[in-house]
Length: 266
Image (cartoon, rainbow, N blue to C red; front, side):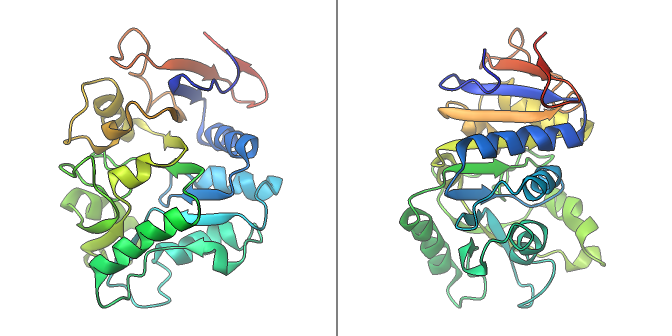
């Protein structure tokens, strides 16, 4: 099998540590050179963003599209995801601010703003490669358990679990917004390629429920099962249960050693 098998639907790549995981994701992005790169926030993709910056992988004409944005934060707030991605990826990579796209959460009509963002993704030609994280409750983007599989970009209410998990990014947990605009599950699945990142034992249950058990609306990430080009990259703690013998979706599994340039399969 090649380093990143194509056309097999689901592939699982395991790295020894977070930095290796980031290097693997950066390799995938470099291989495909997306004109439109979908980006996620949170801690999972940070090592990948550092690698992309260090390697100068992204063309300055690349469009970056956010998965979601908080509703209710003041304009210019550093907790806004647009500000986060600008600081951690777009600006260091030399990508023009006009090529960084997020839902308009300041609009009077948030539902119309969600529709407009969905349309923008289409106007850009669609997302070539989407980077995802996964929440402890299985959410991708901010699609909480129970979200319809055919959902498009929409206004969503955050669960108590998600707000608690995101409280670490705020001085006061009470400041975590209750609402967001998020790409829907169908919007996310429309990306040509998807790379989902998961690290740490706290993500193991979510990964197992989504990809080693029958698909369910209770596990939003399971909506990705059947995507024609999905790669899950993570460490052994998060991906411990994804093995061909135990997965109903029979992923191809690769083991990756600490040096991302030297890979072995077990």
